[in-house]
Length: 326
Image (cartoon, rainbow, N blue to C red; front, side, top):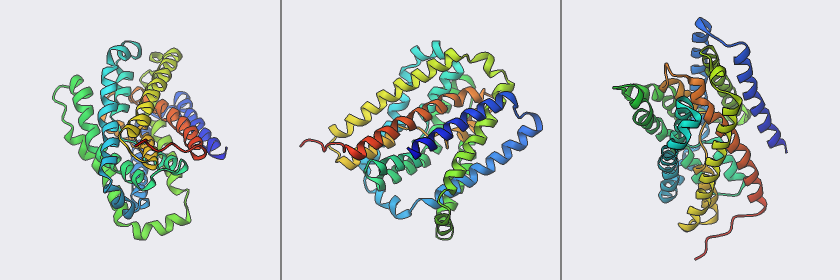
């Protein structure tokens, strides 16, 4: 119950940021200063993520290559494929910018903290989940910009080169993560004394980025374009899409013969998309684009996936997934 209340608090805070950006949007010079502060917070967040993850867990998980191949296929092949296949249906009902945001969500890596947390609650393979989720975020720093440049920006901006975006993402996300790994022996003991530090930075940074993104969108006239009917349709689309992905992530590992612990970890790592990495990437990739509309789908999808996965993880902790039949 406390976990559900904590989840609700963060959801409420996200809504508050959107309302605050609607009433008091940051703009002009203040927006530029706020953007610099937000970038610094993002770098600190990924430094803490790098320091938190155990190298031993990463090494142990890397050996389980079949597991990671399945998660990688879901994250960077199946998700994008389904998103592209849905274009004839979604583009007319969502419009160009929201469909871009939905497709961008499909191109993102998996979550890290929630994938590991839900896998742990459901008694899955935590070591492989740690490795897979971390690897997904690292490789996503390169794959996501390439997918975006080819399927979104490459069609709207002639001659768009993803190289500069990859370099910016590397400097903002990957370099701090690697520094965190290198300095882990010195930083992690202090993190153990303040276990809520990463969560605080994680949520605070997302809230800052969401406020900044929606401020720019409101100034550009977001709520004159997106109606409450469109929000309901987008929520329904995200719910249907998540249901389809979860069904595939539940049955395919069984068919492939993975054991119970691996089934659970694959399910949670394969069915989710990251908001923590997604919004900073959007800031870099979609310069000059309606950022508020771009990040709206991942915000909605993220909240739905957390609530649904929380229920499933709690259920599986009491009713374990059955072993695959020989």
